[in-house]
Length: 208
Ligand SMILES: [Zn+2]
Image (cartoon, rainbow, N blue to C red; front, side, top):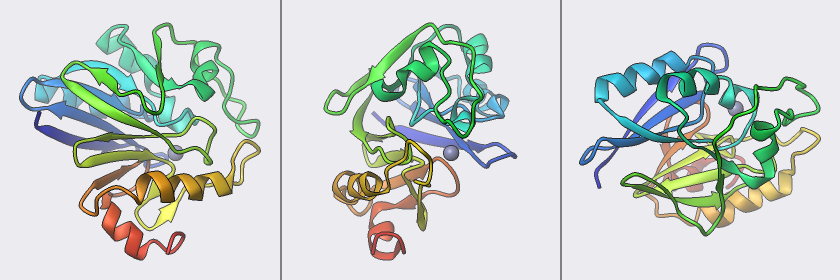
């Protein structure tokens, strides 16, 4: 398995949607669905990628806004989310009291559970529950890459000032499940540039 990561960011919130491809098979997943899904769809087309699933690090609106377009273009592939935020997709319940926007319910929803690898074609992701920004926040690890959603950013951590946030759980999850990964692990965040676990362990002002 030779994993390649392509990042696209929307212009509104700079939310990243990632295309993760196994170069040996062209099997792929999309991680998060930002406001400009055409950007990642262009990468899918250029790479001749066979997208097997859409994985969500969490369900804030800027990470799921592009779902309907992705599903229209890619067919009814599974959309995987942690059980704690499943109803946002299945029932269209807003994640936040503070942001009462909802999406059209999604039909083919599968679960992301810690300790249970998520397999999509030739790709297999370890699921790390990293809540605190939101209850069902997950980080997804494959090889020497980890996708951290809005838990860990380059030089920052996620917001935890929402009604359903938990700042202590956020820090604890980052410390125990992310900073314990090897230094050279590449970190792909929900917003902003990539970094590494080693750099964040040494320099992140919220964690040192
Ligand atoms: Zn976000």
